[in-house]
Length: 449
Image 1 (cartoon, rainbow, N blue to C red):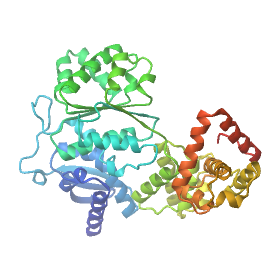
Image 2 (image 1 turned 30 degrees about the horizontal axis):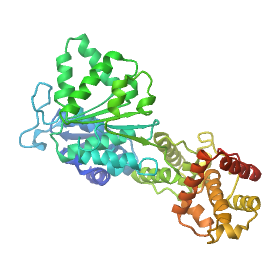
Image 3 (image 1 turned 45 degrees about the horizontal axis):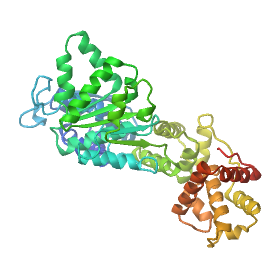
């Protein structure tokens, strides 16, 4: 028993290190270890409010670390102990309270999804900065804030980050966080049971921050759009912040009323793009660190190269690899990753190397490989150098720093500039694109990989 209590203290220490302070204070501070019986840990908390929040937000992380420390699966039961709470235990919040301390919706925010745990890369840095600005200056600069991008790219993470930071600054902030589907269902039920006055009060009067996920699901639902339109106007007019996400740009959402589209353009529209290789590696390394695993660099780049750009599926691939490693009692090596993920990833043998691309570009442009890798910046050398960097980036799976090193020890920013320059010219200049296509085909590469 004393050993497990010490391990429980270590679990709490690890959670504190991983989460923003708001999310472990007071929640984690008001959990007391009571006992451990068979496979069950008994914890004490002040009231049911804490139990509900802990079960939904902290319990999975606590059990993950406990399993890692004890090599045993556990479940949790709770006892109520009012002495663990504040001097005046918080009452169960209800919608009839004129100024609730915290509404039940607040607790739907995921404390693990904070700004500090969000991996910033080229594809999301603008949206990330906009969200931070909104959290620090609500309804001042970007209202509404519209975030769009594909599935699993971090839009929900950013919504949770905004809500968490605003609550950390002012716990009395009334946050309403839900999906467009839930907004629709809530409205339908309110109509059915003749509670539309309560519905409108909840969303228009008792709301300082409205966070709505997947707004595209309002498309084609005229009655719901009508209510959301008036909700938007009420909140905007009273200086409340509105943030919504979607899987596409507002004007591309078919079935969305024009008046809603125009209002989404009032503030700022920011997109979230799929992560590049370096960002995927950073995500994998952070996830592995949270699991107490040191992920070898070659394994991280292997997964990043072949795994999808969907962040949730990327993390799922890592979870599978770590589970296989634990099951077989084998270290996580590149060879083990290849075997374990065979059939799970669409792994292909690289069809090109930096050397073959350099040689091909040198032959095509009638220059020397040493010239491409050297310091000269004449037009005759810069063009093949940029195209070679572009093709190396698309076809070798190497990181930007590694490509730069292969091109005479250049900085990764030089590679980024070259790739972007080629991509821009290909879009605007058909002749340039044809030349890049011809270079690729002479080396034996498809233009798109």
